[in-house]
Length: 70
Image (cartoon, rainbow, N blue to C red; front, side):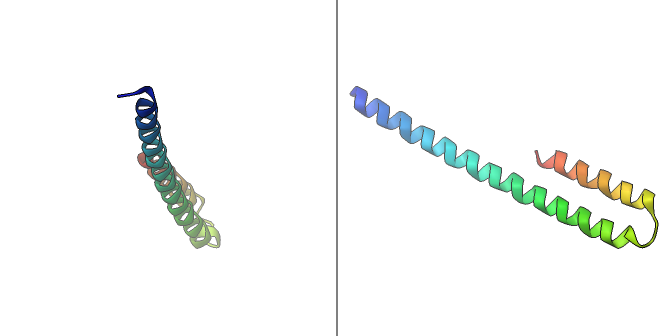
């Protein structure tokens, strides 16, 4: 193979790697948005009830979910 072919092959591999990383980042972003949405719903649900412990538990659960996604 010539140097030009080697370079073209390397660039193709880099493009594939970048596309894979972008897809993974989009997946993490989608998961984080779902966790945030769940947390917001939980906070709204418990906000008027004065259940601070329940809100805290919900926040901890959301944080744990986010850690699992990473």
